[in-house]
Length: 430
Image 1: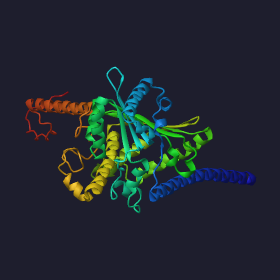
Image 2: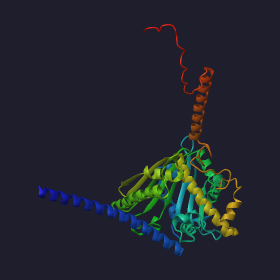
Image 3: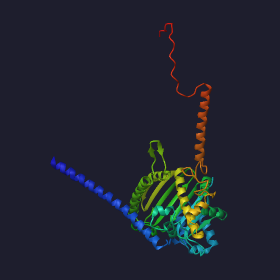
Image 4: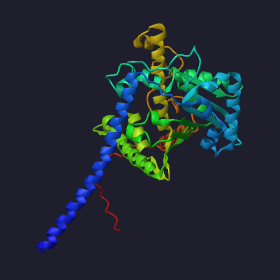
């Protein structure tokens, strides 16, 4: 009996030791990746280096577009058309470098691809171009690293100083206005475009290893995000491409653990949960709640040399994402104001308080998960349906109240009946 007891203890100790080693190894991988990525990014920021990207002639070539969007030949043909138009307009664009590429398009009633556009971020041979940047005291500086004075500005400098738009000629003005609005913190035009027709998008980093942490630098070949954002729903798919299955599994393990860490961060640091208070529920950091829910509902898969992540979301999560983009645009506008007119951030904010374009201090801007898509912003089919349902229930309650009033009923609990007077007649026997 004693031998069995010792063997059971030894087996239990071995199991605990193995589990502890596995958990410790995975935790070390996550910490090492996060710290290595931070140090690598800090070095790039402090040294003032810029991500070189890939040659524009390669990224915008037919073969590269086919490798990315081969499952949608109509989209590839449309992209070729707008790229050829842009290259014919300025042949120098072939000499630039692309560090990130954003592709957008919509579908018409017959599911045909329309309004295709490519936003190429990088460096192009244009002496008039100016580097983009976040304001040195902006939101992202506080979130990323308080010791770096130009964190946001340097982050944008890493990607490049130019954004070149390739689109259909008749759509050029609309896309430039949309881009100008986003870079100035105006998210309403994009919200209106989403309500008109869902916006399909793809974000591609041709050379992600230049930004990746050291232990993932040689594991990533291409990073791409594809998805669609509609007025009431949305979905995104992330695709990480590696050279071998072993490298892909390593990426999968680290990304999976980092997803868990991100969920803990939004839940604990940003209070991303609904609080139960004595007076009821409180959702004071609704955006953190939505991001935490987004992370929890995401799906991560490993398939050969691919690591694929998928997630679907609703209108409040759409609004959280759109407001994050808006906040980044506000910081960009502040940086431009400071560099061009020497206006301090609070001066810029005060001057923009009456701006009708949807800035933080304008009348159009609203806080909460019903703006910019929803009842307080651009109406969507879902918000209209919810509003109509509330109106129907209110009408039914009002009709019931009027009917009760006509019958002489007040809807309050009946009062206690007065005691009956003593009767001289004998009670009936049942």
